[in-house]
Length: 363
Image 1 (cartoon, helix red, strand yellow):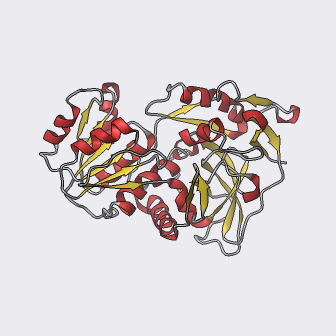
Image 2 (cartoon, helix red, strand yellow):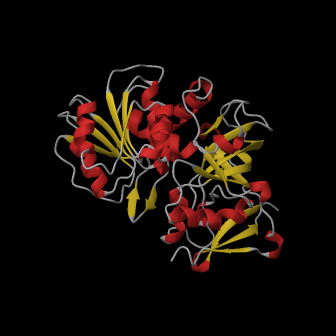
Image 3 (cartoon, one colour):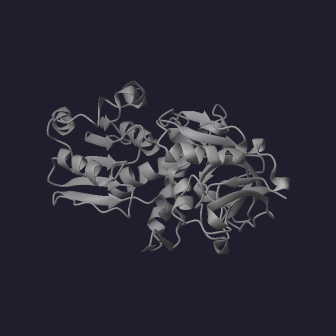
């Protein structure tokens, strides 16, 4: 039987054998080869959102092994795909997180990628890219590439995974791009398309951003979305109808009257009503429709044209056995401008009930 990293009592994770997941008529059954770690993964365990029996993890790359009769996209067995799933849900939802040897996903919510790209790098893109795209194109209403506009765009904390995608996506439509990051990341972010980088710790960062934008800044993406960061981003926005995207919907900040806030939550792309972080999120079919369109754009345009590059990869050895180390590194803020990636084939020891205990690092 296939394996998965299952949440058990007292925030423990255990590599277990499970039956093959069932796939629906519109879905693909995918053998996962690589997974990437996101902050939401350890947070689901740490804050008790992932109940016993659930499987965390969102980003995956893998190989199609079964195709539902109504699956869209002419997928065939053996094709390489990447995508994301809603990890950390209770087992009653019947949805496996990505930290599993097999996952299912609707065919419209995965994407193919060029043969020149490896699965361990493309796996860094699904969650971060759709989060950035939801904000820039779906919520703010900027045109999808290859359309072009003239506008200044600010991303606060451009070295985050979402920030790196936002830089490239906004640049792909012609925006003049301003970002903040630690000085050690500036050259790297300029290589992704940032025109100007500032140190977010600089006490004069807001007036410097305004000067770079010539006091004409209407669009911003706050990849930190905590109160002080959001305050500074709002202070930099000068247009009377400014728009701001934030990524932590459960954190509230005082937003000035001239700024319209869009709270982006990637989980809305799956088209289901969910109770998350103590709030009820109604189904948003329009978000799912956008994600379907955007993932197709990734396959057909953004990746082939080199307009969206994956994050830098730091590979953690041991497959799912390495997740403990990866969670700890991220919780200690030791992950910067990179994605932690695991190769499923390296996982060992599940027949002996190999336990990975997160209790010490998650409490």
